[in-house]
Length: 281
View 1 (spheres, one colour):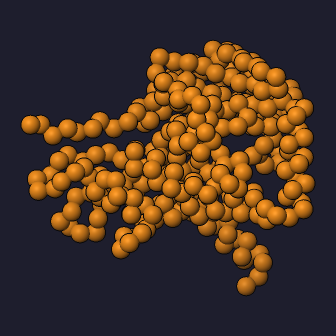
View 2 (cartoon, one colour):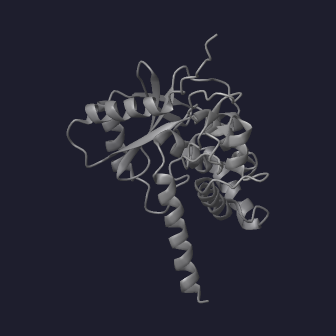
View 3 (tube, one colour):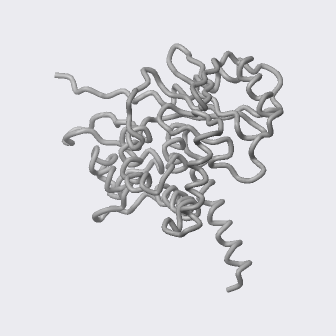
């Protein structure tokens, strides 16, 4: 098989997996995209288990069914329940956990397989080989840059990022464009915070706290966190905090405030925990 064909097949596989994730609701998509927030290889060790826990928390509990004990829910990714026509939803939490992980006799969720494939491909490119001199030199360079360059806090539960960290070549704004993006954030009511070399752009609403990331050319990214914001989380725990996200394109000129408010309201609605059904006496 030619290298060109292999590359094309890999590209098509990536696009297919990515399309599956893009079809998910914002809250679910944010959980599945959290592999991008793994800063070190060690962060990836518990990612799969953490994501499964998050997805179980997002599952909508089904109405009680006679003769069933405990709560049940369909998969928040594929929307399916057990293969048996007599069962409604997976038992929470372990039945759904087995479906998402593909353990025991359970057939693993196909969307979960796609998400894990995307994460593994990203990590292979980012962290492998961890032990190579080139990797160690790159890590040392990043550490040195952190000691003297501006960084951006894009979430309270993720380490501050360098201006090009996690970006592909050509995606990063130049100084003039970055200043323009910062001015747009001021126009949207964001508060600028600076501490040593770390910048943060934050706007609070009655129900949420929104962090802005102006680094990428063409659009500004926003991360939405429900109040109250949990403080003092470790990096591993922080990855488990649901974060909604959206973008506003630079070309958007009209109704910025209405657009922003609508996106935040949608994210808050998606992130809100499902109502727990309590059996009556």
